[in-house]
Image (cartoon, rainbow over all chains, first blue to last red; front, side):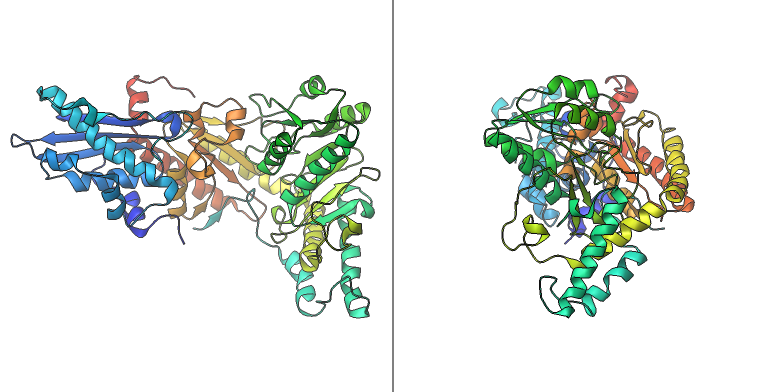
Length: 146
Length: 395
């Protein structure tokens, strides 16, 4: 069996929403280069609090790119509150599964969305519970999320 | 275009090897341990293969032990030396930081069993210094094991000199020559080698067959117990067809070494020259002491696995030392050992070419790799920061 599902390869080969949003309302970045994966997520949010656009830049393996792409698909058009409900499991399911040692990529995708929302809240002066936005740092000893 | 550029991982079986082995799968399938003449046909084939392999290494046929491959040969050589040393109270083993895992993991296991292991540096050029080995030697050193050529970056080690040092100090010297056999001249006598491992599938024999050379007088002990095959040193019915193929393949590789090298070097040099034009790229390991076919480079700002997947889509088979492809969380221990920072090591690419590759294929690689690197860099937030000067270039 191939390492990745057809769906993962589809998103890897033709990532959706890849790139930057120059006038983004929120930008979130998670991961670190030392560990081999960084995701940066840009969101545009309208007056109703709906995410109208989302783009990503990712440094990482095939599944890091595919999970980034899928996460953007899953939150575009959604109200912020709904985007915050996005779980790494939902990303994995939407991609028809990931190999066990790649699950951390989906966690990064979930965190990247949350980090972008946090940045949006910060910019807008919207209050939030800081505990909901704690992203454990990956360190050189390995990916914490596995 | 399909381009197989991963010959350091494995090679195709040559027609010579296949033709040599087939009769031992179909017509002469007898067990070499059998008494009847039919089985003796297989025994004769083993004898001839042993002679042929010994001749390729300038060894005596009695010094060749067939194994299931390079990993088993490495395990047996190291464990044998450790057991011999322990009997004399010598429990110190010397190796290097960038050995193959067949060596490193065996040493790790012995460490848990009470041996002490010193791994010497391999420096930025990927070359072990004889002085470093000498400095590591202690009165209780039971073995020095240094690979002939590194599997990832292709650097060739000063084997003759390390061998001479070990001979002088009366310490057994083993070399994992899996990447060198069939590609570079090997003379176990002139190079002062006590034990040497080879693996058939790296030089156009099938997978699952290898050999351990152990100089007369160097005691080998079993790691597989059972029957009396291999003069009692390696139990298990011999892989007759595989062994015959390995002998045929090694003979052929050695006979054509000069012409193969002459064909491979211009292809390799073109890869180095053209891929080095990619900004912020780096060639890994000294080119002065190098196996003919291995090219290892890093490209800053990208990750190796996505590079490999995209190359695969363009028909190119290659490998990388990124964490994602190493199956662990850290990038290749070889690239870290030559001092590359983690973030650079993640963006490595190994292309290993052989005599079956063509210049047209090399041109395809040269066309595709820069495009893929550029595409991935455009996607990469790391590259974005490097471009904006928010992150310092490391290469």
